[in-house]
Image (cartoon, rainbow, N blue to C red; front, side, top):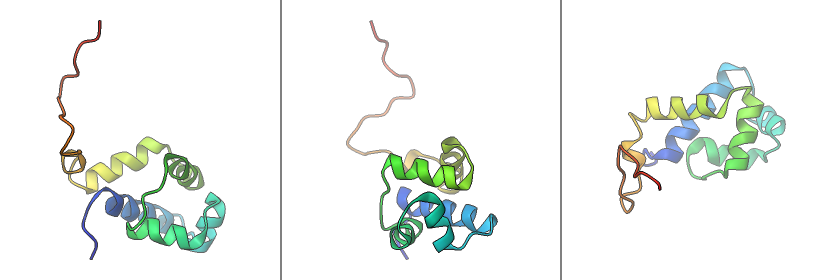
Length: 97
């Protein structure tokens, strides 16, 4: 089983949304303009798609990008586990100016 990271949860969400809409993986990949084998890797969480590919996937699912990310956050138990440990995160961004 792959490590349950952002790519894993993204793949789970995409696969579930695809199946809910009744698309085979091959049909869905065609609709999104993505090679079927690449789509397999995305759904398994072994590839990190670019933002352009994520936009194609959202369009093929007929959902907003935000709907995908909200579901990823919900299933992945929040975003805290996905934060880069090398980058300090503050709940309050610094003031500019």
